[in-house]
Amino acid sequence: MFNKIDRSSLLFYGGALVVFVVVQVLISLNVLTAFWNTIIRLGAVMAIVSLGLNLIYGFNGQFSLGQWGFYAIGAYAAADITYRWTNESSTSGLLVLLFTVILVGISIMLLYRTLNRIRGLDTLSAFTVYLIAAGGLTVASVMLGRLVAPALDSILLALPTNVSTIIVFFFSVLIGGALAAEVSFLFGLPVLTLGSDYFGIATLGFTIIVKVLLDNSDTLLGFVEMKGARGMIGIPKVTSWFWVFFFLVVVVVITRNLLQSSYGRAIISVREDEIAAKAMGIDVGHYKTITFVLGSLFAGLAGALYAHVNGFLHPDTFNFIKSFDPLIVVVFGGLGSVTGTVFASFAWALVLEGFLRLFLPQGFETWRFVVYPLLLLIMMLLKPNGLFGNFEIPFLRQVLPPLSKKYKSTDAAKSNSAANEVSS
Image 1 (cartoon, one colour):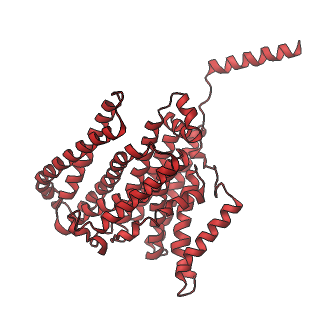
Image 2 (spheres, one colour):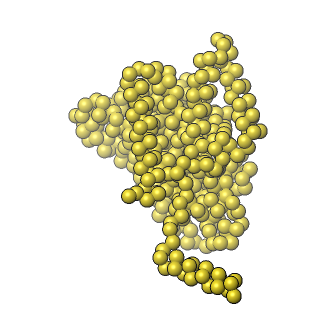
Image 3 (tube, one colour):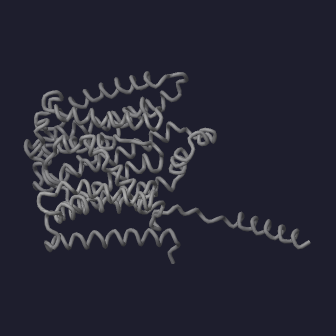
């Protein structure tokens, strides 16, 4: 017999498998056209980036508008890796960024432990140390990646083209997410000390900075293949329904396990009352950093998947207006609800990019940007806690462990003694 937790897990994974198979069969039989196939994949991508924001804002209480900036970092980093492989048969981009995220990640962990032990070290001084270490290791990674690239090129070229492309794509998605996470850590060092409103303004400024850098990526940053404001083309269209569904399930499981752990309870306590959390000995800055980095990691993964849906990237896709999309999805689904965020993400894609685009009269397609906010406004008036509120499916609900026999017997003895006192 399965206990309650095992049964809910079985139902979740079984239901997820059924959903995947049904959608895949509909795609294979061309029941779902290429248009609707793209819409569904965009919904899954939006779910991943919105789950990251819900973790930051809904569960930790940090109002952030920087999610779209990390989404852009993951998209362009992964696209540059796969572009170099498919068009130049070179893994230099893959290896340079791989060594960068590994070396910088190790240095961040070591410095984090070391600098936290130094009393009186101010935030800007620590930030400077991190930047110097990251800059030096990035230069070393460039040289090391170019040195190792020819050997890896020969190995991958010996494989079938489809296999080598999938391998490069898979690592590009992971690297895009890791790069976004490390950038978010460095960016978060000076700004996580700000209050909620000021933190939101700072993250919005970060998104604008990223967009401006992407506009000038070919001239200012030297990435000619990105073509700056003209848009990047030549990206392989590798993101299938399998890949977006796989990463969505992984993100949901990671979020669920985190929230049901002691780390998750500490993260939520910071949202509920930061002063009380400090009084209970919780390192508020530490848990804010963990949440912000993990949420940005999810955004980077989503961006990397998005880059390979249509095979084209343009900086206007990542402007600050679009940064409100995941925020709207999180609010629509319900702050602090993983189930609501996933549902609202697919609803966002199907309604805004699907039904409204197709069924509005010709010439009125842009009116969907009016209809969609009106629907959101009506929903907020009728149900301000969001569509799902705090509802979660059984797999995602917090289940407290049962009491041991010792505690059960103790509670029973207390109850009996209390009953005897009342009767006497």
